[in-house]
Image 1 (cartoon, helix red, strand yellow):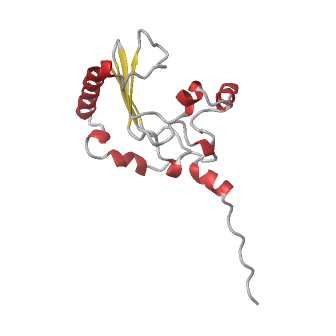
Image 2: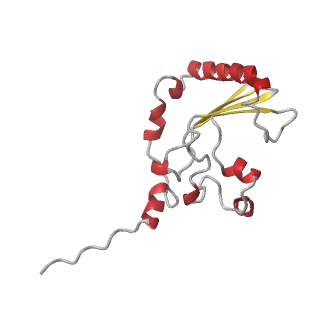
Image 3: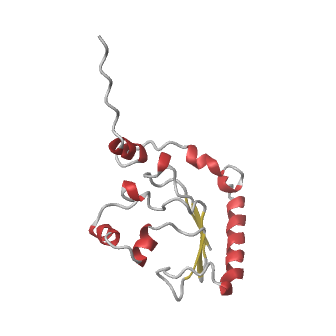
Length: 161
C-alpha cells in the first residue's frame, strides 16, 4: 500500500493557494481525496493552467472541451476511485458507483488512519496551515502577476497648482 499527497506544488490560483490531495494505492485500487474540489487542480483557467508546462500536447487538449480536457484541466470531484487492473489509465471514476461504496469507505478509512499516524497537519486540525505559506519562487505566472497584468494601476491624478 502506498500513501500519496500533494499540497503546495503550483501557483496560479487566487492568493496562489495549493490544491490539497491525498491518495492511497493498493494492488487493485487507487483512491483519491481532493480536499478543495472547487479549486482548479492545474491552476485557474484565466492564468493559463500554470501547473502544466506549455507544450503541443497542452495546446491540443486546451483547444477542445472533451473528456481529455475535463480529466486534464477540469475540476475534480471530492473523491475518486479507479480499478487499476481494468482501468490502468484511470479514466473511469468508480467512487459514486454503488457497487464500490464499501471499497471507497474502506480505503478512505485506511488512508485517514495512516495520515493521522504520520502526523499530517490536515488530520491534526491544522489543514489551513498550508494556505498560509507564501510562495517564495519567481512569480511571473502567479495570481498577483495575472492581476497586475489584467488590472493595470490607475493613472495618477495630476497635482493641483
